[in-house]
Amino acid sequence: MVVLTDKDFPPIWGDKIPDYAFEGRKYITKVEIPNKFTEIGDFAFSGCTGLIEIHLPDTLTKISVSAFCGCSGLTEL
Image 1: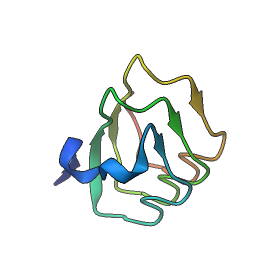
Image 2: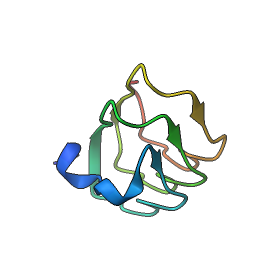
Image 3: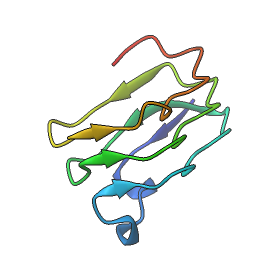
Image 4: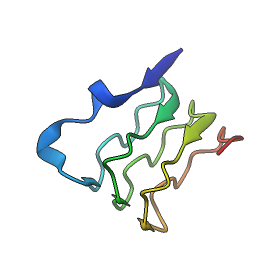
């Protein structure tokens, strides 16, 4: 079980998770997006088929339509 937390999001990203940031990383099972983020870029988590749970902060104002494309295991937001 691989959980992404605050330490996995480099400060250089600012307030946006970049396009393709974690694309295709099938081993990721859970994501806890830190409150500093306001946007999730294109295909940021695309193809993360092992992803089953994601926690979205209240600070988000934009989620790309393709951000979670192919995340077939995603069951909990």
